[in-house]
Image (cartoon, rainbow, N blue to C red; front, side):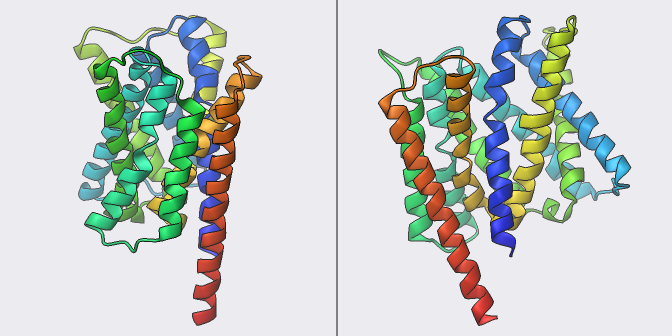
Length: 299
């Protein structure tokens, strides 16, 4: 059955995405690297990793001109999502920014139902709302007045990430090999970042320490190459809405990393948020299993 496989891919994707703070925080603090340089190396190394796998598997790199344009758009869109989310951390609390970003499942549901007339499921909508409530409990830790510029920048990621998920599912790139699609997305993201860094005279910082190179490689491999490849597979096997809902597992992993590795506090709102997310994920899995069984019976 395809849906259970898609759910597994979605959980792997969101889980590995949650490891981003484990590497980026230390790169910015210990190695004093700028965000633009971190993102460049992240996508560059990811393109090399996926490209090597494609060569070993003898994948066909040929794509149509239309697919090339769409993948270039996806690369730029994904780069913008990553940059806006991490830049917003400088202006507003990271928990607030993450909470705003994880409103993207609502945007996915809106795009899929409004533009593609995908059937509405009350259970999936309930799970989406529940997961968002859980994310809010996990991440919301603000006080005082928020910087509205930071809020606006974080809000951009709601739509850019939702557009990425929907485009992969509903455009002609759905026929492209998952490995090839991931390779070209990372390649375009790398090219765009190289161009932006040089045009703005920011430049790309060299890797001067072995520890920084190792962290950048892990950042490129786990929360980028692995997570994005499984994201593409999840969208194809489980669909855009399921993938976006299960993406709420990312902040759960991020909280675990913060508590276990960075010795961050574990409060009651964190506990309640984790319970809500686990419950929401359970609803999605049960709903999809029942749907798959009904389809198999009527076939």
